[in-house]
Length: 125
Image (tube, rainbow, N blue to C red):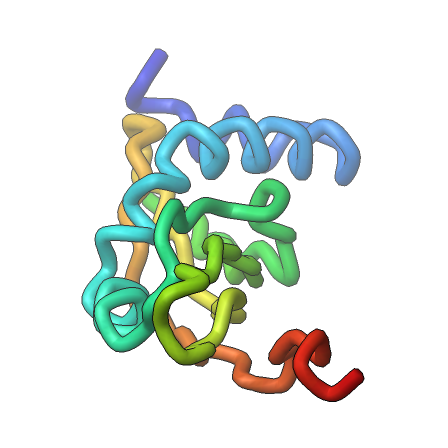
């Protein structure tokens, strides 16, 4: 059956395909936090407890003979350390999840950018 995973995916309706791919992607979302681009942004921040706000959003799915390439967007958030200057508590990014014919997913082309626009206004009162 693993040999025919792409055939299985191609036979699904659009809604079924998105649900199946979303399930595969959600099981390896932790890999996004380990991606170099994301880890670099996390390391440059003072925030802790980084995690995905919601599941990665599927933007596009394209097939080749033996893989599906799934472009996703994601938003990570962390908790600002009150004892340190604000350095961003949100990271936005995109990645391509490559789903192989065995159903395994790996992320490539990961981009990430830390948002500095949501600094708290508490001290402006």
